Amino acid sequence: MLIFLEEVHPMQTQDLLKSPNRQKFDAVVDSSWKQKENSEVYTFIKRQLQYFNLEQELDIGQILFEGCLRGVSKIESGQDIQDPSDWLKSTCFYIILEHIRITYVYSSSDWELTTGNCPQASGAQAMGTYN
Image (cartoon, rainbow, N blue to C red; front, side, top):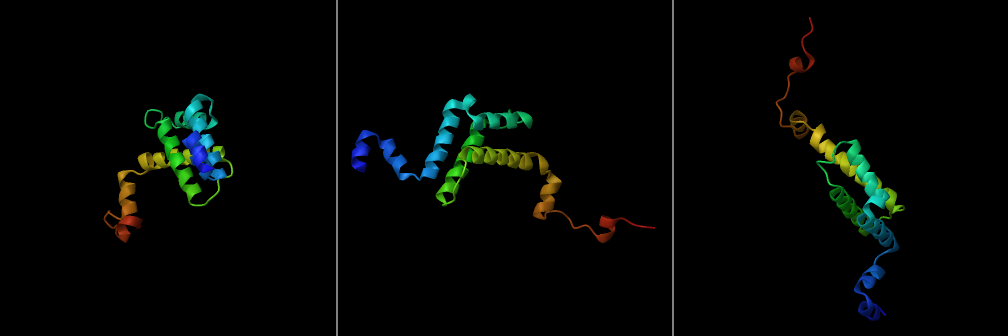
């Protein structure tokens, strides 16, 4: 049976080997890539980039691609994605937040504090002197 399908269309064989969960996820990703402006995932990412004023720094395709990688990884690890569209939107939102956190929140002093590469303050320096 698979040999017959392979002769008809090689992509159909690959789809048969995928789980129903993966097929649903792939359908959402495909529609997001192909229909772009009509896709709710694509427009959601675009709206978030505009909200955070990141249109010049991040590309919608980069975020969607990273979200797709995370989704495939989750499905292949045996976890289920109930609503692929909502899951992908929330994952892409967190990808944007990760970018903001890494780029803007961590200043050099924060980085020194988190890595332990800063001089230790004495008790007097930390608390100040009280008279």
